[in-house]
Image 1 (cartoon, helix red, strand yellow):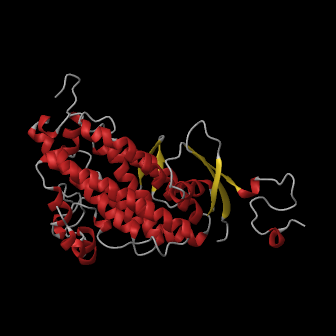
Image 2 (cartoon, rainbow over the protein chains, first blue to last red):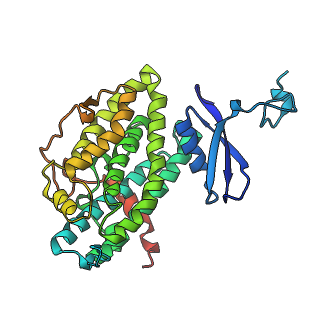
Image 3 (cartoon, chains in turn yellow, orange):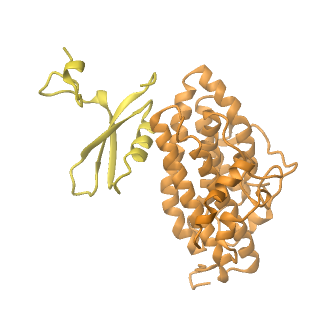
Length: 78
Length: 277
């Protein structure tokens, strides 16, 4: 990841009645680029709504590892 | 013309308006097609994987827009197939900024923020056009273009956060800025005036340039590129357009057209045996 870049988690729903799905993440230095990259990267559906949030805005509730971690042994909090 | 003062087809327009609008649509289609190619040059090799994906998406958007407006020229008596595949370089009406590839990422970024926004401002002026075929196409186009603008704005903020990034942008943005300030034509441009008076657009050349400045000047000056200044609540360019060599018909500041490699690609010369219709 380039200096100053953050990870942005991407959520979207196809219809208003749907729940948001977590569909992936993008790397970007600011919200403008996070939004643009998300919209242009995850264009596989005609989304009703898409939102992004910086990964570090999420706090673990029941596990002692960073949210969205695939390999907890490598990225454990403790 | 319909009862509400709308034109449902080109044949309903006066001869003068039909000629002016047909010319404007070709200018816009050519700029879209060539700008799409310039975005496509950076699909691989952009500074971030996501930026390359964004270039791919923007290239496809621009080619889609170009195709729609080439097709629309059929009712203006032109052959879209010939326009897309059969013209020589000097016949193109794309900006001189698009004649060859952007030399670096900041040069592409200048096209992205400044020229792409100039095209969008020209389309936006037709959002409520009395010429319905354009009016119906512009809304979706502008939805897509919103992300192009935000891509440019996001990158300006990113590069503007360092001295070296700001210096690189200053060098790349100045010539693109000057060409874009000029691109709308002189304040008294008669064609732009006639299109506005005829309800095809909602602003003359001076109004369009002011709208473009309002859009892009706050972005470039948020990082102090020194291209524009605020004057009594309105933005104005620090450089006056240079009209020497300006050709209002092709909306270029100098003669010529796309370079040889660009022309081969933009016309699809290598696909010529595959053209079925």
